[in-house]
Image 1 (tube, rainbow, N blue to C red):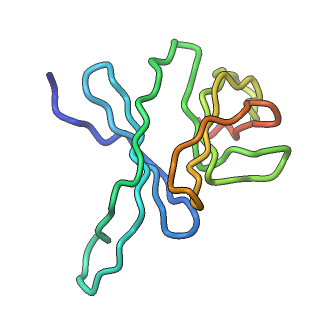
Image 2: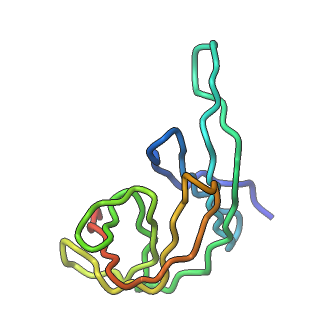
Length: 119
């Protein structure tokens, strides 16, 4: 088994962060909130929920930070989408919301979800 590798993340409004980690063939998303601190350096975080993501095919990508619901950007949303050469990727396989009210990762309908292609 290999070490846990940081594979990116994004800031979610209201003091939260989504962080993606990989270990071997397993990919997990840690949903965490920033804790107040008087110290310099990175802010301490508390993980509030964890999601093991499905293994992606070669034609799929995980998108976060730049996903939209019905044309409006929503940083709580992340999704598995079809990798295309288009500016907006709208073929969504699965989507979730990092809900800042419940502090839970919730599956949501992919209907109306699209993500900006940042590759």
